Amino acid sequence: MQDKTLVLVLKIIVAIILPPAAAYWQVRVSFHFWVNLILWVLGWVAGTIHALWLILRVRYKALNVDVRSSS
Image (tube, rainbow, N blue to C red; front, top):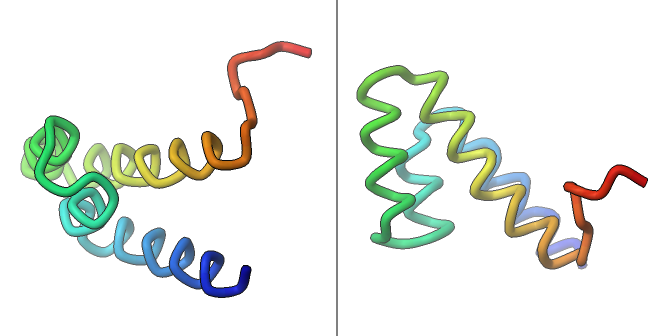
């Protein structure tokens, strides 16, 4: 369990420092990687938000948490 937590923390740190690297680590070369790269070139904040979204989205799916439900 601690290994998964450590990897998650490392991914978040990489997402803050270099968002395309974190996106690649999460989804490899895919549509989301290219979107992240374009967002990062246009603005570091947009690329960081997208990379964090990619990482945390997968984390919520693994926990079976539905973030869209209101109750």
